Image (cartoon, rainbow, N blue to C red):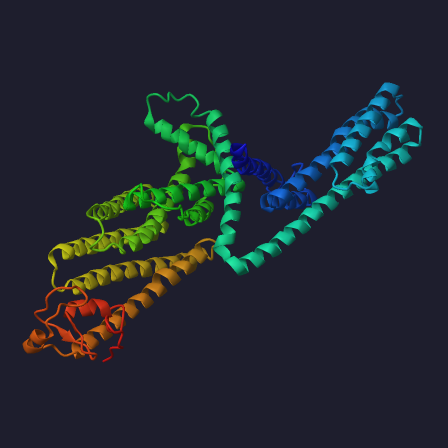
Length: 559
């Protein structure tokens, strides 16, 4: 019994995910239908869009009520009306005599579906009897009313049922508005991340299931130009087959969104795998990494490159040409993943100290090497695939990631050397390395911004490239410049403070008779702070790069 209770939330989650799947088919057939199709009318598009929003955002209880009401509408409108129109109404309007058995069958079908709809209805009072209006058409035909009266009664019946259905859907809309107000209230109390994460997870799962179903369908029904391939002998055709299946999943806007969600999942778990390698697979904690940056990047890059465009697929060359934009997009997204992963793991590696286990330091070095080799391979692959100068700035951006990784790897190696051998003037060496890397990365970012401005001047403003150029200029140029300038000013002030402090004489060092309070090593020379404390010069400089107070008494040190 306890196992059943524990499995109930899982079962409810699976049911909820399945109930959200029609959203994707509604979006593809209604919202994105082309002119001339059955769903291309404006009213049906709006209604389909509203249904898609409700099915994708309503909470579980409200979603069940929505399906309950839609089931009621189908019972009242679709099932009996198909039989009534074909067997009773159309023959009567055409002057054809109707069998009593057909009339009785239609009447009983209307009564049965009406009673079932009344039973399923949320209204348990006499108002639910209004749903029995679907039985009016059959008696009107049986008693021999004029055809135009019978037609009006049929239209009145259909309109009444549709109005009831629209009323129930509008109640779901009001329920959605109430949920939005509740979410705003919870965001104010708990914060955005704690409230948004469960909602995003509930939206991601249907996208993932939809993509898996689409991928499975593409794998079972391969396109004709690759269906004849002997898969047991050629790895290249296996890769071609997989890329074709993924490309088939990206043919529609909804499929592209689902593929972007899958990319976010893959990036998130790949980053988690690297983090587990860094800390040890047994010590990895909760899964807090996210892959939304890679997912959003995949979506917009795919639109910009033209993955959604339809191409002929008559020959195997056409398959390769059609999969070319997808290969470029995948490589660019992998490069973005490597950059964001480096930024995430680099801050965690920086927290390692001399007390950290030696095996963790080895893992940190291996992590840098893995990121470096992967970035080099991506840049090499992009250079081989792309000959257009438009993508050269992107190569520069990802090349700057390689330079940053090399700089971090060199700095971390020097830190390990300092832990073992206590190198002199290491702080200055690390500062020069970081400054050189920062200058090279900054120059590359400026080149990319200038290239983007040149593209805007020659090709005009693009709704994807222009915002990316603005974000790149702000984060990679402006913020980098401010950070570098602030670091330079801080170090210059730190140097002035250190140089302004007096050196301790040999007599004062002997009278002091203590070790440096920062490194706990014997002092052969020391700087004296205004509060009278003794420190190694290098130790005090490292401390004052981030602080302007005495390490022991927090006395403010100024020039």
